Length: 278
Length: 239
Image (cartoon, rainbow over all chains, first blue to last red; front, side):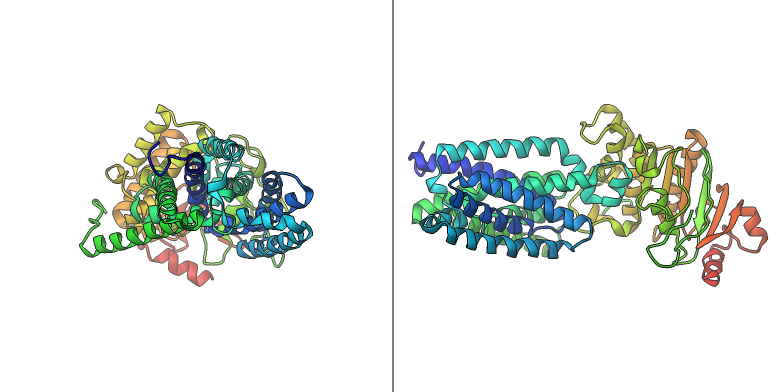
């Protein structure tokens, strides 16, 4: 492959990055519409605690992060849906609990605590074929699940009560969405790190919403913007020796800024014809 | 049945039946318990005492949920939702075909028919957020119509809707009742458009104050049709 993907580590980074760049906005589209954009952040902190637990127990941190993140996500959704805590309060409880547990566990792991940094800030240029296989597996799981449940999740986004009346398993689908969010966070951990993973779930969706007129277009647009942000971010990081995780997210921020300005200019120019047959 | 949120009952000793082919309006002043009664009827809440049945089943355990079409108040809809008219109406078919299945030709035909019924076929690809309030309400009605349910429950479906939209709405409901033997339970303050088509009017203020044909209500001096302002004024006096 031509520069900048002429080296093995860049090709692996591209493969893992493209999968994460696609699935994070896929899940994020539903989270943003349900005003749960920060769920990925909260679960990221839980995943970080899982990583620290893995280092302490000398188990591959991906698996412990997955177990802790999925369990935590299900608990957050349970608290939210049962009205035991409002959505943001439930998130805050797990957010702070997760980061505190991570600090304590990492300190107990001794010299192993140094190894948490690739998960905290991302380390896409050091991903191995083992990492890529896990990312591909988790990505395939997320896409397959969304192909089956996407239409029902859209109906829930539209009106949760009406979806219940129609007999959709709203509670189970909400738990599934939370669990898929956790899976996405773990898949994205090595690409952008747990501190930035929510950005890839939210920013491409925010940009796509500005440009798209349908839910399908919003979804596909967000996936395209997510993938493009990863590719452009990787190229820029290689060219100027920048931290790849941060560069990918800054690329997504730049895309949002450009789209916002473009849409603003378009509106001022009189775009948006009245709807016929009012 | 009765229901309370833990304090005094919101609805109390309510007895109400809606049969196939019946067009029933549920009216009452603000805070009279109409929306709560609907939520209990639809299985979103369980009655504190008494019994509720939908097609002979506990509403929370009703098989074939597609048999209930529900039009919520438009305020429940996310104003910033990036969805087209057609995308919203298509969700009305999910219960009918199974939410995990892909749409078939019959689903697409039902969506086309529902959009035609509310005269919105020409804006099917437009984003919902670009439509007027009346048009958005018609989209929700089309979503319920697409399910071809034998029971339609509508919560303030014509609030803020223009006269032409109300006429289209009335024609759709009358068609359902007359040609499909559907039962319709309509919660509304604005019954002018359907006054001549109703079989019964139920007046609720915590309990049922009146349940009978519109003519009987009219005999008490309350007009649903010609003097449209009468009903809301009378309901305010009730409050």
